[in-house]
Image 1 (tube, one colour):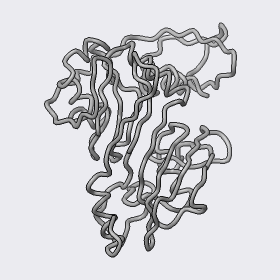
Image 2 (cartoon, one colour):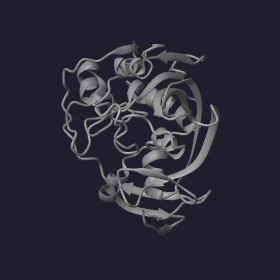
Image 3 (cartoon, one colour):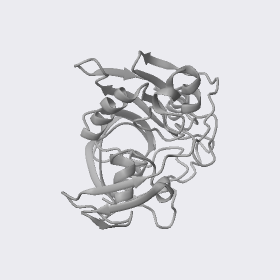
Length: 293
């Protein structure tokens, strides 16, 4: 793994783009190194980096659908269209903006310079459903270790074009950024990062299927890339699917339905669920008017 990717995704110090501006000095095994160098097992990293500039993220009174909340965590049913944290082009209206208003002590727990206070995992802007956020650093570390160990279970529901074959299966590929379109990812034979997705067809319709998805890994756009790879892209996907002539105005039909995770102070995992959103229920009725759902 590249050093900048390791710092961003394994250590969660900062994003890869921030690494270029914030890393003051970097050594691997005592020798000066570059952020693009690939690490090997046993390498020792010495790193000096600057403090993050204050992002001045504003607390905003935005309605939240809270599934569960205590002193350590908050579980939210994120609506489609909401970005998880501020970034380029999205300085307001994000889940973090809303959480800073809802959880009054959040900024103090993580520091005013943290652009992602409490965030341990993400959902794409157009993916709705269950997301858990830590309310303090101790809880963040506790949750992050579970995501890193891949003990968290995440179940999604999607409506796809066509019928995946077989009806129950698992796919393992390597995923890398598409060199022709930096906003997309593609399956590659070498390089990239391993991604594993299990699927099960719940119900098939004429030209469409309702599918349960469980990612074993947490790569960016993983489910969307894998469904496209199986030639059953997710309906309404603007990056990985062609415009649907039958339902030209639909948005991404992908929903994080269930999250199973241990929360701080407990030993047994809890299950947090979100019902199928109205946009997906409506589309299912349209593709199967006789049977309904």
